Amino acid sequence: MCSVKFRGLIFIFIVFISSVCFAEDRIVLDLKGCIERVVRFHPELGEFKQDVEIYKAKLTEAQAAVFPQIELMALGGPSPKAEKEAISPEIRTDVKSTTINGIFGMLTMQVLQPIYTFGKLSGYKTAAEGGIKVSEAELEKKRSEIILKTKELYWSLSLIRELRNLANEIKDELEKAIKRTEEDLKKDIPPADELTLYKLKTYFGEVKRNLNEIDKNEAIIIEALRFMAGLSGKRIEIITEPLKYEESYMKPDELIAKAFILRPEMIQIREGLKARQSLIDVEKSNLYPQIFFLVKGSLAGATNRDRIHNPYIYDPLNDSMLAAVLGMKLNIDFGITKGKIREAEIEYQKIVEKKKLAENGIPVQIMKAYIELQEASKSAKDMEEAYQNAKKWLVTADANIDMGIGETKDLADAVLAYATTRINHLKALYNQKMALANLVQASGLDKDEREVK
Image (cartoon, rainbow, N blue to C red; front, side, top):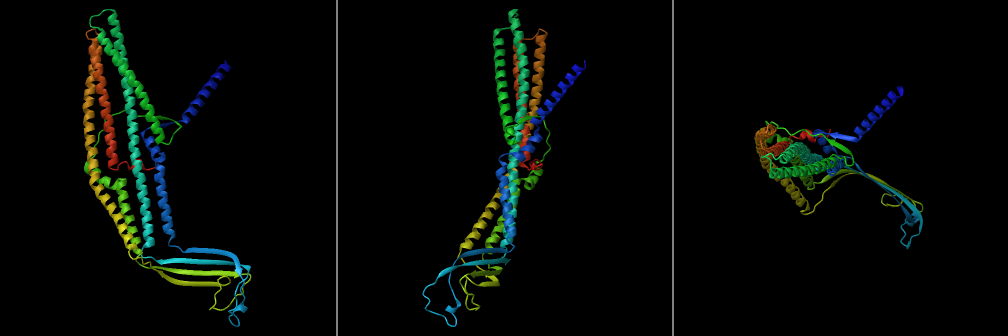
């Protein structure tokens, strides 16, 4: 008795451990989980993330430009012989050749500290900061696009599963009708005829074909979601919500106002204008002198050269020097700088034109999405009523046959009407979901969904 209980406990333990391991290998996602995964791991986002890092590197470069720039150089090589007797007590003019019989070493240093650049350094910094925000907005724009694609795949999967349920329901009804018709034909009951039987079997074959296609489409959608979520090679389960009518109380005017604040494109335009204006200022700064502080020095020594302590005589291979100066640098290029300024101004104007396009185009896009949502909502309500009536028709036809007062062809017509209206009802609900998703994206209300958790 104890051994039986012990074996039972072992069996339960093994089943429990197996189920835990199986659950750990499988990743379960709903719509929210799919969106959270794709905004973090979608393979297409990698390139856009690197653009952000590029501008961060440019910002680091711009921030470092205000600090001293130090240049050190060390040299070494063969040294020509030079003795002070060649110039003291008088300069000899009969030295016809030199002898290379030594080596020299030299260390040079230059420290350049910008003092005033007429806005060049601050312009580069502002442009880099704007570039970061522009590239981040581009990343947000891409996330918004893949969120919409994720919703499209998710609700397509929900639609397919609803259609499978419908197909199985119709399949059961047809099987019952075919069986009943075949039995009536064997009994030679007058309402039954072979034409109705052929019609029912034709419908039955079409339903089975649709079920096969549904299985194929479901597998393709799940594979696409697996790729987008960065889960290639892993087992996933997508939990779908049933398609239901959704009330919407959004007002177009409010959506348009929010879109101008929340849309990534508008953020790109605002930050892009700031960055381009800064680059114009950078190019204009080249018309003015760049003022700097410079410290320059060198230390050199050679094995075969005498050191001359005379400020009028400088030996670069065997001498030392240190100087600190205040300098000014101005480039005069006879029109090149003005051309670059004009180019920067044109780039700025291009963004201004994009701004005009966005300000005129976004309201149109929102109104289009809003009108489509209104149409989809009305169609969903209308098809709900038609579907309910078709369902009553089917139930009545089925009941009439059970009571012996109906005909099989009436049931076949009811099944066809029920299937058609239910399919159109589900499509209308799907269209409403996608119209709402399009409106949310167009107005920028997917901002919370774009944020990486």
